[in-house]
Amino acid sequence: MAVGRGTIRGVRPGLETERLVLRRFTAADVGNLLALDGDPEVMQYLEPRVKTRAQIEAEVLPLFLGRYQRCPDFGRWAAYARDSGDFVGWFGLRPVQPSDGAIVGWPDARPGGGVAELGYRLRRSAWGRGYATEGARALVRRAFTELGVREVVATTMTANTRSRAVLQRAGLRYARTVYLTWAEPLDGNEQGDVEYRLRREDWVAQTP
Image 1 (cartoon, rainbow, N blue to C red):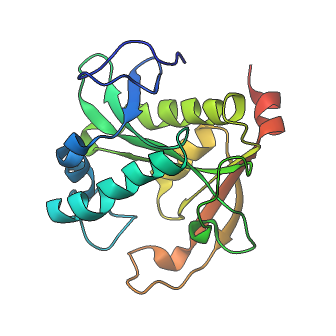
Image 2: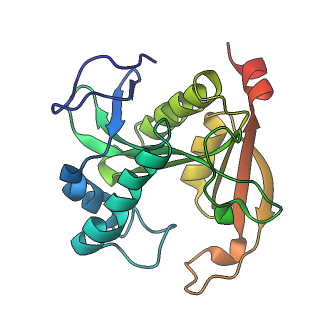
Image 3: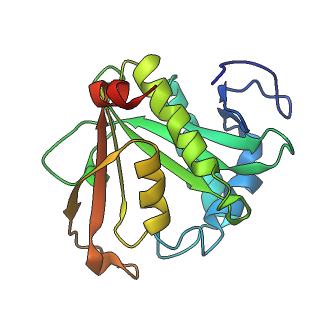
């Protein structure tokens, strides 16, 4: 992974991998986010309804941009394919405050607390190409080598086998299954949510 090389669509990237360029979102990314959150298949395991353009403009994008102000080295990064320049999705690290409750409910924390939640969301056109694993591994490496994180955590629905495979390939290990009550359950919620974790010392031991 190389940091800060090159540009894509005029925006300096936050980091690069072999096939991806990641950079901060900007106000011009409404269409890109709508391509994600407006796709029912992308949102299958996330929310009961897709987002509208108005929701992207009023809720989603302001949330992303606001987190850059609070946590400059963390947040969600727009991901582009290096060969084509196509938007493929986003990857993110969020500082969180651990508790005994489910990871999905852990609140934001200030940087320096030592625990970060890994997340990612890709367009359907990017599925099955290894981008999710590549980006997730890059952020895990960045968390442990640059950001002072001591543990990376993540959660997904038990039924979301694709996402679980990505977490495992990124080095995270299954920790537990939790069963939560949702106001608007999704298909598969009855199987629970799985939580994955990776400590820095374990990552060092398993990384060549």
